[in-house]
Image (cartoon, rainbow, N blue to C red):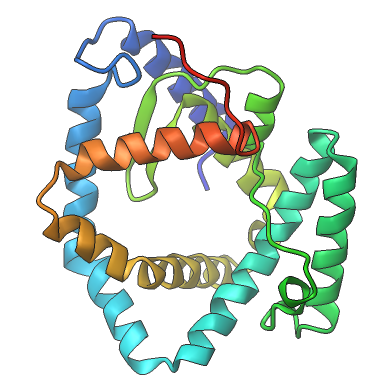
Length: 232
């Protein structure tokens, strides 16, 4: 994983660069660089990630794919719970703790999502949202190599989540860690195969659509689904 100080320094440098760049959308002052990275990511996806995800989807039974998704969602709930607490969302933290405990014990380490069936639905919290909750601005939109859409705040949040809150990074065996991270990537890509095909078939600007969707979704998440109206 990237060194935390190096990554944060890179984020700060990109923030300074944002003041020197320009384009039509004020949220995306780094658009030329972002489009180049987006094109690179699309090329890597087309050449390697998508074919592997298609093979995974073809050979893995549906119930097994669901079990893998549930397992990784359960691991993610560790970070979700930590960020609940960091945002002082005590009631939500209690529910997410129960969800994590039930799925880890009775759900075979999360392979079975028993908690959702019991009414304890999965939530989405990460350190980028925690920073936003406490008033940290998003900064410019930023496309990361392989990882995709982000912004300066969420990139810093990824570093903190990965270094301190993601159980996968606690694995001591580097090969095992890389294997689990790769499996998570392929599982997620397989889940998005149909959506990505539909987007490509729509003949829209994939970069612009992805950017706008990401920014609006992140804004909604930070305000727990009730973002204030934007001024004209």
